Image (cartoon, rainbow, N blue to C red; front, side, top):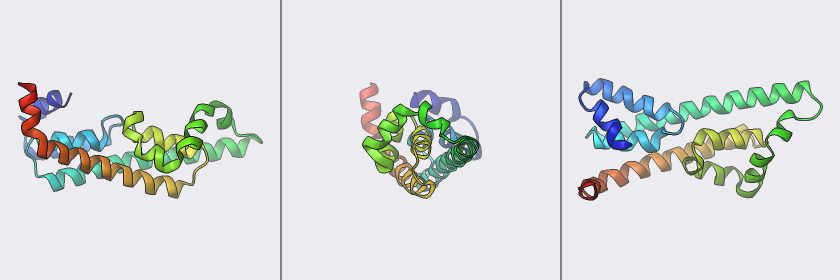
Length: 161
């Protein structure tokens, strides 16, 4: 997957490459943990690449948190019982088991930080706590995956053969 993305954007102007890093970081399921390695493979400077991918990912997750909070507030305000409670029982189980920190740090593993943020807010966690843990998670995954690719690029190409 990384190779396909890199090949598609390596021929375009460097400014557009940085724009693509932002877009990749903003997209759920790709996020910073894909955007930063793509930038590294494109041989873009790692610090601006990491910052761009991480900021894009944080921005899109904040939108999910904002919309989830608004929807939850509207649904619980209009009904005596939370409509979300019945629909999100499985999410509540994960939330009870792992909490905000666990769900946030597992974000990319469960699919996307967006999903873990949604589940946390919908399950009743405070918006502020979810924001803090999502930012920590996005930074760790973005920087971690970027450094792994940065220091492991030769291994990647060696394995690829």
